[in-house]
Length: 435
Image (cartoon, rainbow, N blue to C red):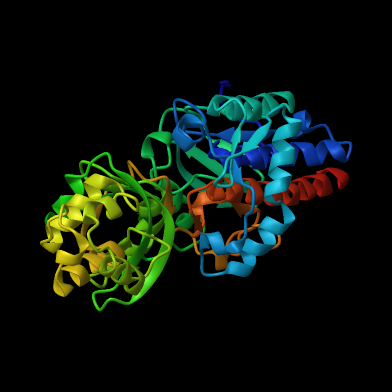
């Protein structure tokens, strides 16, 4: 879907045609139509620098697109203002998202984890439905049309390209540029510079979130377990052992370190902690429902039973043998032959295993960005900028990031709908006044 740039003023230009940008545009057009105003005559413009629209949608969830989660609340997000998250999600909930996509012909199915995927298991189903709705509503998409800079004037915004395109004038502007995660999608952080040029600030730290973790040489044994997956409780802990954040979820050992939902959920908290505390690391309980005392007690009552027989009923055998090796215990030993010191060392490794992380895999492998425009700088009612008139900010550009499981897409849908409805109200007001 491609159109040539036009010098005709747009009533609203949306920079970024990802999840939040597409939803904002659809929301504006639908809201106008519901008021009897033809959205085609009101010039809604989506601008995106990527060669292909919706890359993040297509790669999400292993190419299946985890659209939302069956239960979404503010506790699933890292944010300085939980009430703003709560309010946004209440106004456009997970069920609202399910209903929205159902209306577009996309049936979602719930998996045991609570994640909601299209019944087709194909992210193209989601993207095509959104783009078809954009087309039906007469919304124009310009791409690849990378925005270099934006000027704000009394009558709106002048949007300049980094190529020889004529500038675009828009009465209203939406920043839906994303953050820095997955730069090939177009979200390379340039949206932050545009936001700053329009009066906003950016958080001190901009970090990859939901990103795999690279093991430190002290924890090379994790790499040797490449391919092993297990459910575990993972804690980000300070150098003093204080637990900063915990998640219980699936974990995958890889050739570089750790991946899977658990490590990726905890990644932004560990990376943030390591900025000021180099000794911050992970602590893993490989048997999530068990404590050190419980495991120590179990191991003390094995009698003639082989240690490995018991352990492989709890965790993958390769992992069990690796932990035994670190504890200095022969896994084939009968329980009664294990010394108290060996037993306690193994119990510690099973329930409080220190794993040292060298780094994360960076924005190229991250699913979302931690940091961005402080959420305090937008109006909680409609996501309008407090720093610049006729400007709205939606989605990942804001300092809000959610867990794995569809929560970040839900944030995109919710903020897009809320901002879109407010923008449509602004447009209809100007149309009524004969603007």
